[in-house]
Length: 82
Image 1 (spheres, rainbow, N blue to C red):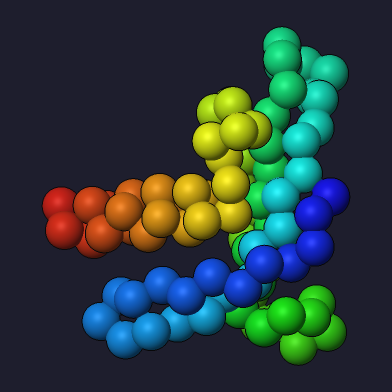
Image 2: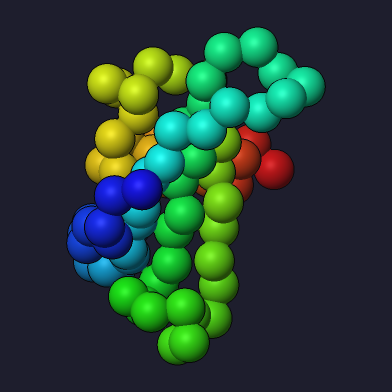
């Protein structure tokens, strides 16, 4: 697992999140997956929210920044079409 990486998102105002990724194999799925752990502060003790995101995108593309940018776009689309 990689160390936490600080990523800044600008969704109206800048927000810092901390992301770590790890490549895993899940018995019921074929191939490897990349899991991202996303927190608002840099420690689990202070975290108000921890998200676990899973993708089958190749690990060379599924970086910490990729997870945050992709998830932020998805949230924007969901809010826009409600």
